[in-house]
Image (cartoon, rainbow, N blue to C red; front, side, top):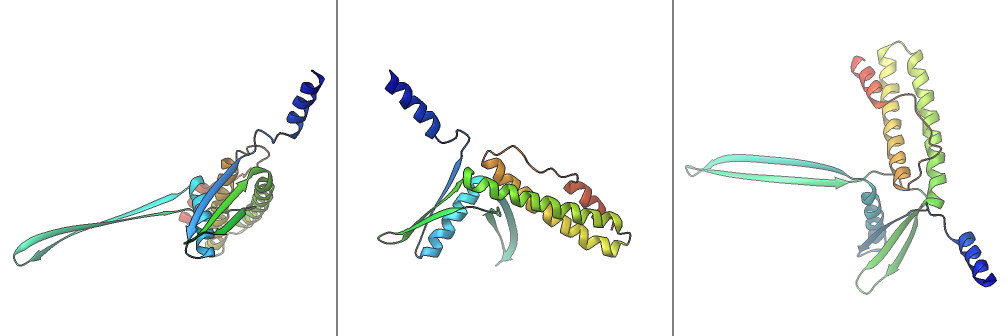
Length: 185
């Protein structure tokens, strides 16, 4: 009885936190670097992707007959920042294999720190925008603010994927407000 209580206490003390998340990406390639890049891409795309599609169609007259053709190009990309990664690469028989891990306990403090830095940069630039009256001077500041807001959103996306939802820095400005001022400039 005492042994089972002791065992239960040890399990509770030594068990990993329930909120710890581990995101994994896998990649394969002919070179070590290609396998690593594929693993990073897989990990990033498992969190969020942007899909862009272009459809082109045309008709032509050839030897008195109409011919129609079409092409479609779909591009999938992810531009998320990956901080605090652990990547392991092994050489297989015909190719290299890589696995990348993004773990909450290691990555979350790095993302939180970067979000705070971005918040400060955005607020500093935004205060300069408020003090600037000439549009020629405001436009680069507004563009810079938009770039930083996008970066903030990408970092926040990863934090949410890691299920970290506490102690987020908050912004007093949004993208729509900056866009509106840019269109006025």
